[in-house]
Every structure is written in C-alpha cells, then in structure tokens.
View (cartoon, rainbow over the protein chains, first blue to last red):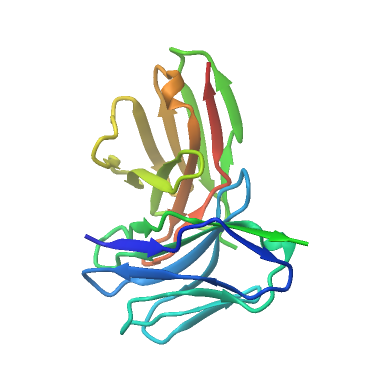
Length: 114
Length: 115
C-alpha cells in the first residue's frame, strides 16, 4: 500500500534559520503530494501541493518539489519565523482511487525560537 | 475559498450520552467528506469516508454502530458518537473535497471530552 515517511521531530530552530523537513513516499500509482500545517488546537491547513513530477509547490515562503526519481517531496523555507511553529504533515493522495484518500506521514513538530 | 467549518469546537459530555458533530463546507459542494480522529501528538487516523447520499465507508477497526455518519447534503456531514465513553475522548477533524478534486480541505476540529 501507499506510505509516507517524514523526518522525526521535534525540530527546533532559531528565527531566520533555514528549514528542511524531509519527506519520502511509496505509492502504487502516480499520486498528488501535499504539505499540511497544523497550529496548536486547530485543524489542518493546506500549505502547498504538487501534482506531477518536477512541479514545485510554494506558499508563504515554503516550497517543495515533486521528485519522482527519488520519490521525495522535501519541505524547505529559507528563513523561518516564530509564527511558523507548528506541526507539518506530508501527505499523498491516491488519484487512482475514487475518493482520493490521503495517506499522511507522522508529522514533524517545528519550534522556532526568537 | 474552500472553507470547512465544524461545530461545536469543544464538547464535554457524560459517559453513556451521545454527541453530534457537524461538518459544513461553506463555499463549495462537498461530494466527499472524511472523518478523522487524532490522538495527542499523533497523526490523523481516517475513520470513514462519506459520499453525499450514500452510506459511509468505514475503515477497518472503526465501529460503524458507535460512530454514525450521515452525509445528507452536499454541504453537511454529521458524526454522532453514540453511548460515548472516556476512551472516545479525542480530537475529531473532518475534511471535504469536491468532485474531481484531489485536495481535501479540513475543518478546525472538535475536541470531545467524555467524563
């Protein structure tokens, strides 16, 4: 079956540091890939997505590139802020299924200190 | 765009009572809605998938008689936790997608506490 593996947290950075959260996947089909962010006590917000190989998703300074050859979708940001502190989930959508179920990674807690 | 709401945001109930949680898509027609459960510091566990007008499809290990899901319209799905017990205490999150879309949009979640 499909699976998503993302780097274990927690990750603690100082403000303005560079962020990378690794994500790799296995899928039987050709999935869409997503990064969602969850702030404390809230639901998930879509951060960015990519639907085909070499696509780059970007939003709010975050970006990730769909790498089919390495089955990866690493999240990066050049300069993090305290407000970026949250849990980040990598996910894939099985487009072969009729309901586009999401398979999630375990989440990575990011804490950014001033 | 693509806003999903949940109500209530928090609920506390006594053991043995039933609790209903609503999930609404505010600005799109949700042909499919999903219900998840999230334990502290854990990822999301998919409980069930519902398509408007059809019976929900439950994931393995989820009791369909305990977690009743109704998707009566293209903008509303409800999850009823029947005869709730303390072990049902959790954070419940819904999501929705429209026909042909690969993206799910999530509600803000409902914190259920069963005393």
